[in-house]
Length: 500
Image (cartoon, rainbow, N blue to C red):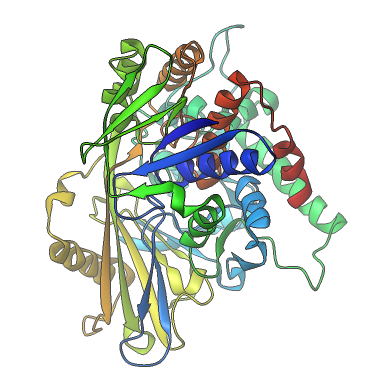
C-alpha cells in the first residue's frame, strides 16, 4: 500500500484527498493522510451559521470566497459526485446591479459591460461613471492596432499597461482596476495578464480590438440563449454559483466523502526528510512523524518554501519569489428597515483612486437567496490588499468600526442603524500575486518537481486562484504522483463534460 501525505486541508488539499480516495475505491493500492495546522478543514473557505438574535432563523456568513465561476466545471463535478449538486445556488439576478464609486458618488455599472469593455452604446454614452474625454479615449480602442508579438516569445504585460494602451487611464482607474485587479486583490502595475487573464491578450491578437472582441462574445452569448432557452424546471444559470448553506458545504462534502478519519487537524509539518529508500518522512509540531511514498504540498507558496528548500533550492527560490498580500472580510447584519438605502444591488466597487479603506462591499442577503432571515440584511466589506496592508494591524473592533463608517459614507447606511452582529475573517498572506514573470517561475517549479519522484505542489499560488482552479490543482498533483506509479484516472475529463 502506497501512502500519499497531503499537507494542507484547504480546497486544494481536499481535492487531492478526494481523488486519492476515489483511486482507492477503484481498487488501487493507495491511501492518504492529510495534515492541517489549523483546527478546522477548508482553508479560506469558511462559512459560519449565526442564529438570528431577535427571531427564528439564521444568517449564513461566508468568510472567504462566497461563490465560484459557473462556467468552470470542477465544482459542479465534485458537487455531483458528493451528492450536493441540487444544493447549488444561483444568484438572484432579478436584483443584479453593481455600483462603482467614482469621484465620491455611486454610479451604476452600465449595462453591457464585459470585463472592462462596453458592448452597448447607449448605456455607455449616458453613464456618469466616465468623463466624455474618457469615453472618447475608450472608443479609440477600435482604431488602435494590436501589439506586435514576436513569434516564440511570451505575450505578456501588466494589466495597467495593457488597459492604458488600449482604452486609456480613466478606463483603468474607474473600471478595469476594481473589476479585474480587485478580484485578484492585485496591483495593476505588477499584475501579469498572461498569468491571470490570457484571454484578453488573445482577443487583442484575434480581433485587433477589445471592443470588437467583446461585442462578438456578447452576440454569441445572446445567440446561444436564443438557441437553447432555459427550461422552466431548470435552475437558472447565472455567472456566479454558490451553495444553499454557503461555500463550506462543498469542502465539508469533500472531507466527508474522502474520509475525515484520515485527516489530522491542529498539527503542523515542521520539516520533510527523504529516507534512503525514497520514502518521505514528515516531522510534526507535536514531535511525531508520518511516513509516506509521496508528498503533496497543498499550502500557500510561502509555507511550502521552507519545507522544499532542503530538497531543491531552485524550487524554493521560485516559491519565495511569489508575492502575497493579506486581506480581511467584515460581515455585518442589520434590520433591513434600519439600513436606509436601496438594497436592490449585488454590491459596490471602490477603485483605488478613490482612496477609501473599503475595497468593495457585497449585499450578501440580496445577491444570495437565504443568506439572512426575512426583514434582515447582511452586508460584507473587503479591506486590505497590496495597497493597504497597514489596515490589517488594527483590532477586529477597529476594522468593524472602519467598515461601518465606510458603509455610512459610501453606501448611505443610516447613522442610527444598529448592527445585530459582526464577524471578521482575516486571511494572512492569503492572496498570491501573479506578477510579471509568474509563468516562468511556475514553469521552473513544475519542471523541477517533475524530476523529483513523489513530490507535487498544489493550490492557488500557481495557475489560478478560483475555487475550481484550486480543486483541479489538487487533482493534478495526485495525477502526477499516480502517474509515476503507473495509475491513470483519465475519467475525470469525461465527468466534466457530463455534469455541466
